[in-house]
Image (cartoon, rainbow over all chains, first blue to last red; front, side, top):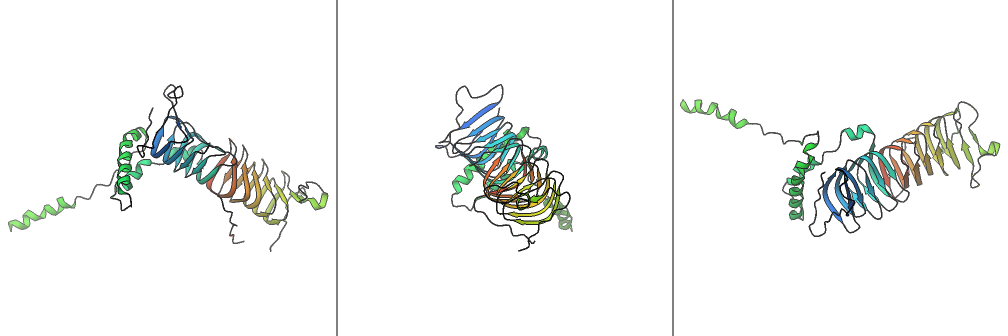
Length: 186
Length: 138
């Protein structure tokens, strides 16, 4: 089981109701109406969003958004995504099954089927972006986010897709050093 | 405006004016059968039921249904759109788009309301909210 959440410390609560938690290795995560998640969440199991999610959701089971639940960001659900009549989903989704009830808000790209799930989005890719010294108005928050993303990376290690390693800088220094001694001898 | 009611294949496709069937809400209805085929552009004041093989552009003041056996490569603009068959192309629903449980839709959609039943397949971009008319070259 892997569950992680990041966000403003005071506001962020991921509630797992008693008796509704781990079920033989599968998690069941509920974000209540006053809960808020900012960052990445990877769950081996199901997620129900009644609160707010700003970031990425990747779930091996199903995601359900309803009763005022709002998700802004990409969602990958290996089983299904259900957007209830009072739910809002803004972002690209990759799912095996998709159910949208009348009244729901839905904006984004939809990729369905096996092909879509075989090449899941790599949340790790965002890390370098966040690490960049931000010229944002709220640099403190941006740094926090990058740290949180870093902390999450080990959790993604099980994924077949490896994190993009920053290309090693061309070691021009070595090549440049070689001719130097010769030049100095002369 | 370019109005064309092109019916190729069998004579099942008929507007309600001809045979009186399919009147709904006092509006005319253009109905195709499973063995019919249609290719071209249709601008129609009323409801449209598509079946068989369909290719082209459909601008309809009423509702448009795509039957479960239908195979359509189309651009749709209608009030309510219900897809039960296979559609490749963009869909603009001024009110609601419904994808039935066996529907397959590959294309972008612009809708005010959206309902996707379990079992339906969708690949494309979804936009909800303000309705904009398609700017097609046709």
